[in-house]
Image 1: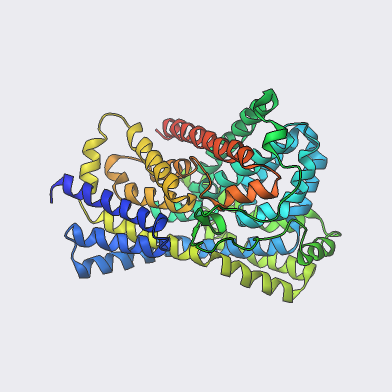
Image 2: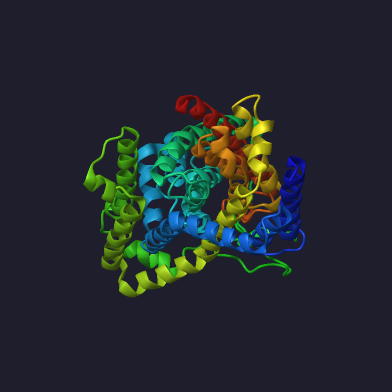
Length: 478
């Protein structure tokens, strides 16, 4: 078929998927699956081959990412039940002090704390964050707000074990160890620079306490009829007049009890299994780059085994800390929250597989001959536009990567760079269609005007910086 026809079909179907999600409030999993089927049929793949390709694509991605997402869900659920995050924030404040806490907290949220869902993280850390903000001066609420917004959103899509980063790695076919190292190289400077620049702007007068922060806390999460998102930025259908509050600012009995139960246990012990797992994965990735084969490390450094060990050891610590019954309840809750992530990841693989069967690669390759940066810029822009329209960081990143990933090798483009560029683009313009926006606005005591500065502007700045860091990484990778 003519190249222009294939390109038109893919563009039209993606646009239809966006309209279906935003206007018709159709679940994104269903919309993406129908879109993948439509592309297959309309580009001449045929009914039977379309179905088999979708199934194969779903299975291949879940084979790579399914268990890893499951292990992350379990670890995050158990850490939350033990009250580990609350204690960590308190410890960071004691160690790094007033000036250093935004950077220490931001880098922690963006890296090793990514096993815990964003919504849960905001809720359990918000009371402590507001106390920290009061010690940072008149712009404290803005500084803490942008710290949370940037670190949580950047970590989701670019840093293993963030579930969207794991999903992206599966969609584009990047080894998880490689995604961990590449993501770390981009995430750390992105988070640090974003917090530094926004803090400077706020202290120079861009933050107005009288207009940008609330005098009193509100517990409801307003939405004004806008499309909200569920756990981790996944769209959620909300036709009801107003949702019940997701959580309350006061710590739950479970969280308070967990903190009390674990007070006598070293904080490092609670996080040690996950940290050791990440170190094993990173070490094996380095050995692979150096082409050094160490059989025990090839086994223990495999992401599936490393994170499985972390699950087992975290479970042992959690059972000793809070008891078997509470651990089991936390695990069930974690799987409930993560269910849609599993399916969305697999359907993203289906979309990528169907597109890979067509001649879109030849079309795009001919369009991107001018500069090696062009494909990365297109991935970034595609993810940014999708996010502005849909309001889901995860969905927009997976969709953009899924479109470009099948043709990346024909253009000589490293799949890691595709994943990072898609993640960076998906961060652009987090606004009122995002549940994270309203959670940060409400629980950190910001007005909507303040949240537009910390969340929308702050994360958009991080999106541009992350793109720049990805382009720098492309030079390093040659």
